[in-house]
Length: 214
Length: 214
Figure 1 (tube, rainbow over the protein chains, first blue to last red):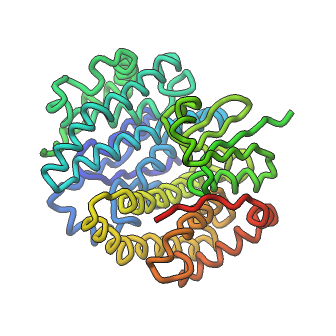
Figure 2 (cartoon, helix red, strand yellow):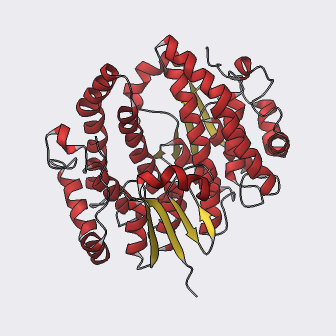
């Protein structure tokens, strides 16, 4: 019997969306539990997540945590891992680089000091976003339209889902419709991923989620 | 013919040491290139690392970057990965949690504002270090003396190598001989890892490295 999957996350795309993309890619049915932000403080005590954080993915009762580790697990289960350790290194290196960019964005997002926050935003817009997006664009060109290995792997779905999330709030201040605008190899990758029948269907039918208020 | 391995890193334990532990564990000969900090600005232009950072691991000329991805690659090659996707998730979740702790330490370490740095240190010593170390200790108890899966995997070597590094500069201000002092399951894990014949030999024969000056 197929395992029962239950994803618990906020009512957001965020770090849950790569997992939702990957489960959909594999046609794996899952409970998509979405916790309203207002209920989180109470639910946190009840749920008691291993590191106090979401997302969690329950697989036949076992509670998986750490969003990237969960994404790699689901990516492997749905057949989107590499076919040897060197291919998996390439996928992992790209994923870790997406995480590096996310840390920069997170540092800006959580900065309390207004003046410092303005400086962090400047650095983000002028240096860090272009640096990382150019790098990803270069890889997509090098690897036949994908971020690694020359074929579709879980990092492609992971990346486009994270961009999907970032595009909800970042384009406003960079003055472009999407973070990917102008990066032709990444725009092509987005078309590839969102054109996959399972992902296309997911994007058409997924619940409208809470947006990050900035 | 066995591939040729060349590790390029600073003359530090740091993020290179987990890779050195893992290569030694697998009895894999490697060039251990150590760049003095003073030479880095010049060498950076010559080496031109994919993300401007070290460590790099060359495997038969292919240049691997991103330290965790490299560690996972070497961990797999030397037979210290899990035996199925769920076991690998458990290893990865523990590794990502070590990284979470490293981010907290890094944020304190790089903070320029003296007052803020003092606050970050307080939070680190009173909350974050105990939180994460207790968590790791709990896992080591739960998983039969290891951080995951109930047997030796690459996260055990990864963790002890990172502690090896942190213990060079953190114990001074926490007033204990090691970050692990008082966490009996982690002290036992350290004995297990440093008692492995290959690691024991490495620790006895490795070069004395530059220490972080704080």
